[in-house]
Length: 129
Image (cartoon, rainbow, N blue to C red):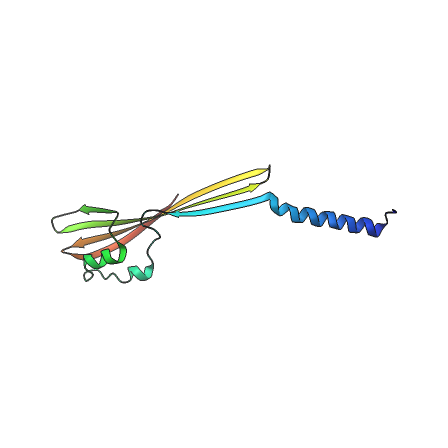
């Protein structure tokens, strides 16, 4: 069999195509997301249903569930906190060359000041590690 320029070019293109197609198998990526015990952060729409000075504690608990923590500030005033945690982990591997692991944790904390059975004010803070 005589190799001509056309046959050699076609064989080269086939080999290059095979290598390109196979290279996709050499890189793997995996991501996972986990939430803390309170689940995903409540939506802004849910928070908009809380009207300071008017929303009773019972409605707050109906909307958000039991708080993560309760702290007595005075005889009539309590501070409820709700902690929402989202953990993300990503793993990328290039076969026999490189492995990269990356994790992050995003925390949202909601604070509700309850006085005489009503939500008086609320605020939130967040952090990422």
